[in-house]
Amino acid sequence: MSGYKMFSSKTSGELLACLKLKTESTMFIAGGTDIIVGLNEGKYKPDTIIDISHLNEFRYIEKNGEVIRIGALTTLSELQYSDIILEYARALSVVSSIVGSPQIRNAGTIGGNASTAAYTSTVLMALDATVFILNSKGETRNEKINDLVIRPNTTTLKQDEVMVAFEFKVNSNIKSGFTKVGSRTGVTISKMNACLIIQEANGITTDVAISLGAVGLKPFRYGKAEKGLLGKKLDESFATSLQGYFQEAVDDSIRTRKSWSYKRVAMTGLALDVYDNYKSQ
Ligand SMILES: Cc1cc2nc3c(=O)[nH]c(=O)nc-3n(C[C@H](O)[C@H](O)[C@H](O)COP(=O)(O)OP(=O)(O)OC[C@H]3O[C@@H](n4cnc5c(N)ncnc54)[C@H](O)[C@@H]3O)c2cc1C
Image 1 (tube, protein in one colour):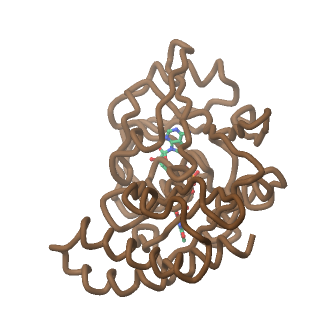
Image 2 (cartoon, rainbow, N blue to C red):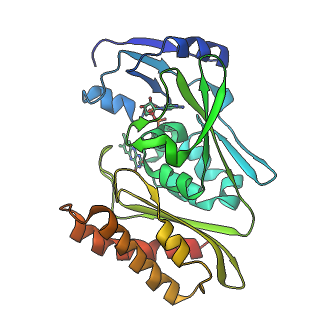
């Protein structure tokens, strides 16, 4: 690691003061599981680091009516075991449970994971989550997660901004699933992953949300499949259609890439797995 200034904030007042000092190359330490590795490997070269890991006021999971709000410092383990998340947004618990190891999940936060366009972003996109962002003047703005994440480690956050919370709507008729292909052996190796959220009535879909990760530069909602699978019976033919759409997604997104033929085949398994995971709720 080479020279950088380090500031620590334990309260939101201290955070605002730190945000005023933020430069274009400032990074945050939340759980530290991604940034520490990146600093050690020389991948990240910030001039300033702001430690936000002690900001416990941004560490919570709340449900008010149909809205779930999660503080950006909430750890993946907390999401994995939260009764609220298990009941209303199970895919977010599933994805949190398969990030890294228990040690990584105990430290790693949803804010850190989402800002690197990692696994939880796939689920947050399917949930159509909104991110709440605080600036150095104490003002808050919000943005859809889909717009915030540009590519891994690149967001639309301005120089004096930090993510403070995520919010999405739920209801008890929604079921969700998440899965990924293969194992992930390093911080930068991203594996294909998918989230499927379905609302149904009498075995027929009334709302479908699908997002795919590691098929393109960042996770994305696959609108073509969402539309095509609306009003469909949830039987074996649904799984077959899902497989077709997942293959189309690879064709549409990365046909010219070397990984195209492998990912096209792997996608058929991913489609079946995510449907099984959805059904197991
Ligand atoms: C061995 C190992 C295995 C891993 N396996 C997986 C895996 O399977 N799946 C996966 O998705 N990830 C994996 N990761 C990556 C990483 O652990 C997770 O993405 C984790 O959730 C990052 O969160 P963090 O709080 O530790 O982020 P940090 O390392 O603290 O920060 C990461 C980045 O996010 C930014 N950031 C953090 N919080 C905020 C905020 N509130 N506002 C704005 N920017 C913020 C920081 O500036 C930094 O750029 C792995 C890492 C390791 C070391």
